[in-house]
Length: 194
Image 1: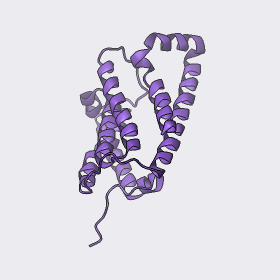
Image 2 (image 1 turned 180 degrees about the horizontal axis):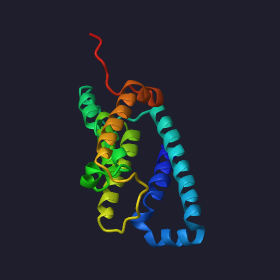
Image 3 (image 1 turned 120 degrees about the horizontal axis):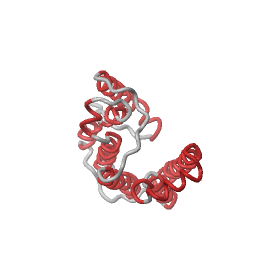
C-alpha cells in the first residue's frame, strides 16, 4: 500500500503544482526553461504512475475489503463510464462538449473515479480512485480561480464533437470487450451464463 500512496503523492502532487504552488512553478519554468520543466514534470509523472501501478497491483494480492458492492451495480457503472472516453477526447477537440464542460478532462477523471468507487470496495480501490476523485474536485474548484495556460488542441470545429463521441465510444468498446481484462485482469461487465 505504501508504494500506491507514494505513487499517488508524486503523480497527483506534480499535477497539483498549478493549484498550490503557481509561483514556484513559474520560477522553475524560468530556471529550467519550458522544455526542461516539461521533461522534469513528465519524468516525475511517469515515476508516480509506475509506483501507482506497482502499488495497486501489490495491494490487490492481499485486499482489505471495506465494502462489497452488489454485482448488479457493475451494469450501472458500465453505463456511467460511457461518457468518460468521449469527454476525455473532447479535452483536445474544441467543440460544444469542451465549451459546456469547461475542463472535460477533469469531468472525465471525476466520472471514472466515481464509477470505480461504486464498483470496487477494497482499501486500495478507495485510496486510488478516491485520491483521483478528490484531486479532480479540488483542481476543478481551483481552475475557476486561476489563469489558464492553453492546451495544445485541434482547431475548433463542429466536427470535433462527432470525432470525440465516435472515437471515445470506440475506445470504450475496446476496453469493455478486450483491454480492461488484459490490462487489469478484471472483466468490467460480468456476463450471465444462462
